[in-house]
Image 1 (cartoon, rainbow, N blue to C red):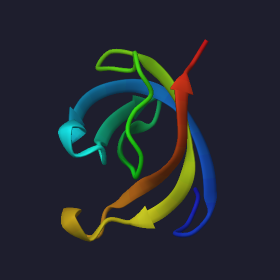
Image 2 (image 1 turned 45 degrees about the horizontal axis):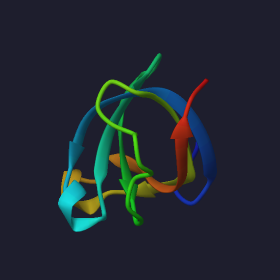
Image 3 (image 1 turned 180 degrees about the horizontal axis):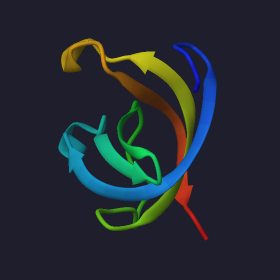
Length: 81
């Protein structure tokens, strides 16, 4: 399992998108191991939404808003083919 600050790449399905209107969306992405929040610091690419299978590249971080649970600071996201 990756630790805070380590780069990761995950593939999963978007279950929820919050704060899309702020251009800093927070995604809930489900893969085979469970659900992890992904915090993007850029707007989502056009055409990516709830139910899409995506691949996310980013870094593990401690998300202070969720009681220290891990999250991914998203660097890039694209549809998983």
